[in-house]
Length: 244
Image (cartoon, rainbow, N blue to C red):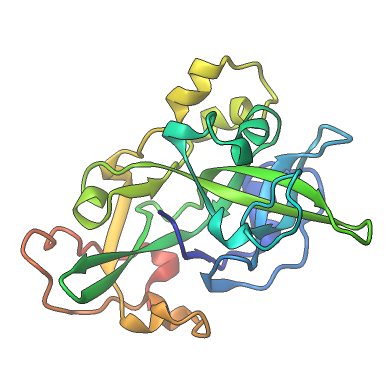
């Protein structure tokens, strides 16, 4: 799963990177973005069709939901069952999006010990993670717009740490994923695969990241725990933006 991530980059820079003509919204940097908090999402605007970068809430609320109470349970959508789940089926067909991330955290659990790791692209670029978004009308008539992150089975070194990982899309897939270019269902399914291990950097971080109230750049400082056997390969240098 993906339950915490990093989004510390300047929104204007992200708007340029993701080629969105809309003005970048004001968004405070977060080194520990958690479910039910707000994040940035790149999507096709439902009225104009133009590519936008907007602020939505993490934890998808289906259009037909009676209330928003279940949003914290829908932060991730499994790629293998995305078309079988009523919560995600329509959004997959009509409201796919990109979720910009600088990186994400994952925890390796062994016995009672849980060691957190940070994961980022080696080259320091933002991640374009596959997502779904939805609009839900509140009882007062206002709209809540929310999103989920799509996950797939882990591969490479990520599999040493956890069985799931976010789907990271290459730039050449963005137009198809955002429905700016035609794509068949089987083509979209083919995009929901793990990123090549060579693209990713992994490093252990301190336990402080486990507390939602902790949110500062020092969370990314490499820790030096005694790692369980087999996890020694997860000690890459952080990309430049994350280095202390």
